[in-house]
Amino acid sequence: MKPKEALLKGGRIEAITRGRISAENHAWLAERAAEGWVIDGYTVKAATEATPATVEKTTTTNVKVVAEAYIRYPLGKYRAFTIDDHTEVTMRAACFNCHYSLVGHLCDEPLVLVQGRSGYHPVKVELVTA
Ligand SMILES: [Zn+2]
Image (cartoon, rainbow, N blue to C red; front, top):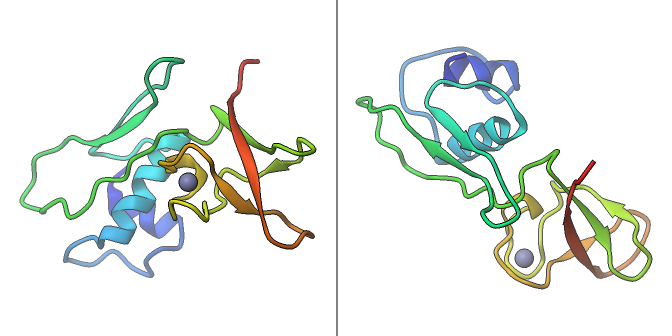
């Protein structure tokens, strides 16, 4: 589908109008592409053990690309667990260290909030093997 159709479907915009897609919405589209949505102009390169997945903006249009989202750990391919007791946390959680969600976090020691607990907790992101 076209990027603006995806934004409409996702409730990010109320109508398809002319004009640029915001950097925030480009990042949102890249995250959806990483989840498996087929969106024109967003090409997902699958992750392997050695190379993390990336989403590339591929079409050349008159629309300037204002941001590229870096998807290191795509949803569905990775899961995150607290180190202390292996409680699963959402990959959408934001890392306190590097301020990216876990799908794109850049640091080696991600810390996230865990529902029902206080403070930030160290988590480990694991490749889903099944
Ligand atoms: Zn981090």
